Image (cartoon, rainbow, N blue to C red; front, side, top):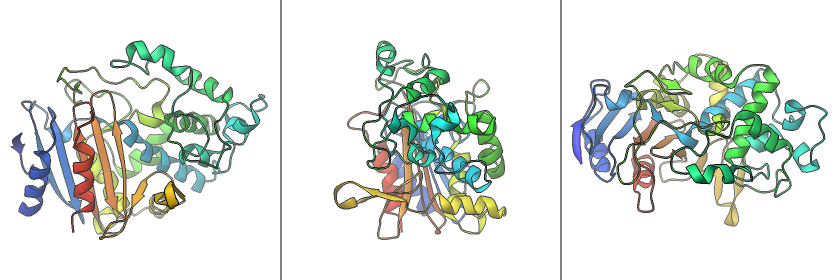
Length: 353
């Protein structure tokens, strides 16, 4: 893989870290690759890939985050709870459709259940697949709008009693987004900007494609380019797109250190809240989760992370709380069985002293 800019002018970093990122990038096969690391606010960025670079530097392009959008939704919920606008134990159905008869299990689903994947809801609504399968590789979500997501929730029959089992659900986090919008009388996009993006200075983080030439282009496994993803009514679960530089800013705020500590005490408290473990799952409760991040132990302390994939792009976000270490990775090729992207990015986070 050709090294096209190591390091960038925006992130001089250290030679040792630059070499580490360059070696890691060589293990990722994609038209565009960005690996970025921040250590106590000192940034190093490696950009490369099999395609020729365009007029906009790769680290400044907007990449589709897919499920790596969920930590933004989690931080938003924490901020709204701190402001007294909603509570974790508020029941979603009561906020979305007060007085409407629903299944008793649906009635018990709270905002906390939706965010922590313990609602009992499936990964996607049952009626999502018939309309999505014919367009699975091009546009599976676009014809499933917000009102349909809400209706599917209100008529759902959860697989398990809410709060008893963990099951990853894009459906649930999407319902959370619509519930917060209904509860506050404010569109999701406005809420996210007011509570998360603006306070953190994330000007290159968007909910829809940016101006021409500013978005990364996703690719199928065979290299065929794909149009920008339309997430339909699943906005909160996966609609964000952002630049690697903005994502470093987001993670630096979580990871701590002088440069990453917000001066707003309410924002600092929310960032601390989303790093606190809240549940365990799996064999011998080996898997730990915060409200919105996966957490693993390492010899250097716990790491928190979240990955995401769309039809033709991938993203990885991770950090070590309190250490100032953060890792961002993006790539513009669809995930596949032999893909090394997540393992490579995860290794940068967990194996770096």
